[in-house]
Length: 239
Image (cartoon, rainbow, N blue to C red; front, side):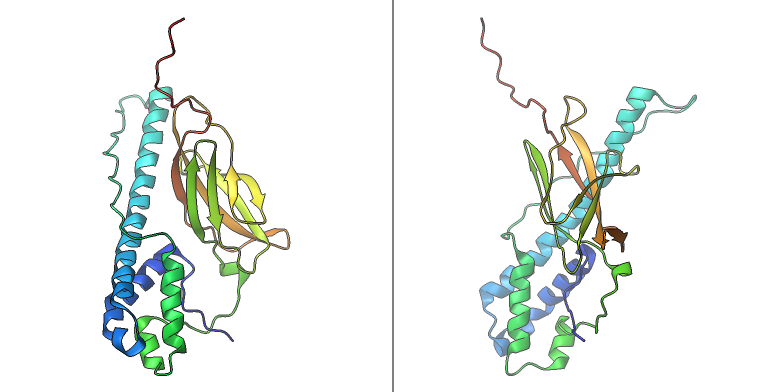
């Protein structure tokens, strides 16, 4: 059976990167890891951790905005008071280039292929994964990237051994609706906004196997979208 050391969730990957980044300096000389690679791995772990925390904060913020919007539209219960919208989270300053998993995996594979490699070193660095038996019932899609463009939302996902994914979308973070099935990454959402204002959209994926949904839902990604919204603030020319 094959051993896999890379986690298949963002939270697992965050912890794996942090462990690797904290310890890689002790093994740099033995395995020929350059100072630049060590610095990049450490910065990558910090950036990924910061952006994950920001994504969680933005998801909570988006839900509070949606809730306040609903109260503004529908009112609040008798004797109640409107919800409070917190401050929008500040985007963290990132210093590393995209593709941190590819770069970290390349370093990990070089270490494992080195003539001086030992299992003890691998266990300390997180390179000796447990023996893994493929179990569709516990498989979870990993969303590997997102883009918000003027005319679409792009979601990249990892297919693995599966047939495809079911895409679900929510506009309030709690009520979900299946909007598509996708057999090849990336998936694109071109549906226009419901109003002339930007709106929060929340997405999650679930694997398809033999045309049936299997496994666990992916982690939720929350994006602020303005498809079909006129963002041009230039005044119209006088007639």
